[in-house]
Length: 348
View (tube, one colour):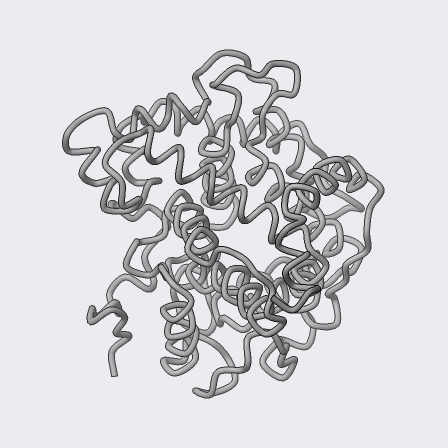
């Protein structure tokens, strides 16, 4: 049986690299190759200047992302890059096929609303528990994700894994917050698009050469990243549904669609709704893209039997003091969404 989603047979693209022509990454690569090359070189420079930790090949990445907020001028701003995406008739049509809107202004409006919603959802205890307890480890369900990390010895060292998980969370918070320079408040201060494109270049540079011993494909491929998106978007959304918490699902999934597209995921492999996410989740297991047989585990309940024992035993998450810098943002987002919590506690 072919891997069929939204009535399309997607077998042929599952092992493809993360540069889909119909993705925002692909559109931007064609429109501004100099920008994309600059981001790649920025990452390469960071790697050259950053020593490995504890004798391993793992290098902290956060400094490369925080540097973007200090890049003055508009080159990396969301406003300018949105203008590039909609800058010609052909690019505007290709971008609209992803975003569903016809202008840069509409795109920025909807993207900001989606980021704001995702920022709120991410900051709640339920989400933190699911992300730390399920999402990160659930990525190992996928054969190619597992194969990739099995080849990276530091992925079985708890201290390194914990730092990597916390760092990933902080990069995501920068993406959600806009990674803007707090010293200036112009319209051009948010850098969500360029920050996510840097994440794509980092992954392409660091992971594209690994091959999977399970599937004989490149490990960093369309299937692996599309499934990884689900372990964060679908798992957290299902946890909120189970607890009957109020959130805007449309905006939540729109954020993940744009994030995936900026990472180079083919639009045909990204869910638009919770129902589609559930269908896609099941497909990954039914078609043996993931370990443990065709029956999909419930998304919010981790099934350790489907995870490589070395990766499972090496997983750890320990809070770090540098997370305290996000307390003001946490307070603000709670205050802004007080009505939602009031309705929940009143049973409305």
